[in-house]
Image (tube, rainbow, N blue to C red; front, side):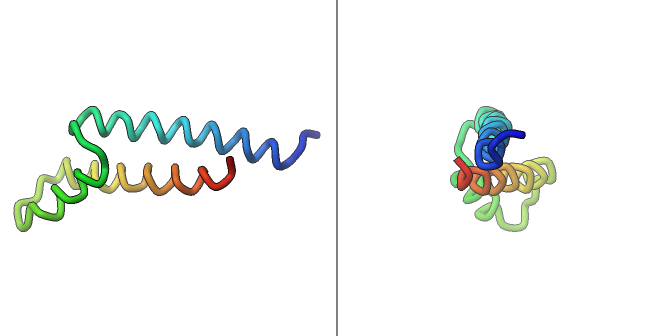
Length: 73
């Protein structure tokens, strides 16, 4: 059996790569980083774009997950 710390490290690297690709896809789609996109969503006021709102929720989860896994590398 392998070293548990090494296994967690390897798993974390795979997850970071996975979420990094998802984040890059969102950056490409909207031409901005998550912080700027978040500001755009919140400044929109009453005009909701449901696709953008769904993407915001997804993008936020990708950023959160990536940050979580970064603590293991």
